[in-house]
Length: 160
Image 1 (spheres, rainbow, N blue to C red):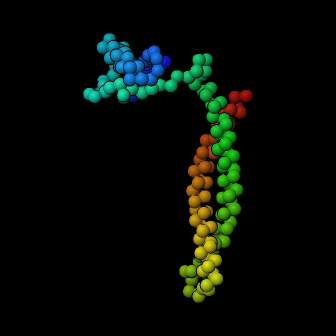
Image 2 (cartoon, helix red, strand yellow; image 1 turned 180 degrees about the horizontal axis):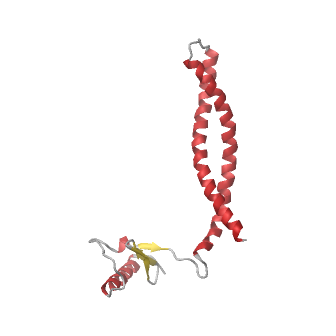
């Protein structure tokens, strides 16, 4: 049975029989209008508010508290941490190479003449610098996700 709410009053839920459909939304609109008419719901609907503006509310399974859904987060959290561990190793590896190349880059801006071999080595090094820059960005984002995943696991471990 679908449940609906309106953005102006998300705590008020309208449950109708069937499944989410235009007909079910019309029934929910009728319940909404009835609640406004009899004064049980104090909300002003702007002109043009219709069934398509109703928000579908996902109910929690019977007997399950809202916090119990965290068990579903454990698998993905472990996967995020595993990916982060692999990314960290790659980040460390590329960082060392990128630092060496970055020092060689200074020769381009110095006054001393550069050889063709130095320029060729730098050109190859630019690919490493690019790869490091990309991995560094991904690493920063993954670190934030990993922190959140670690908190999920910490909560799960505290519950036992």
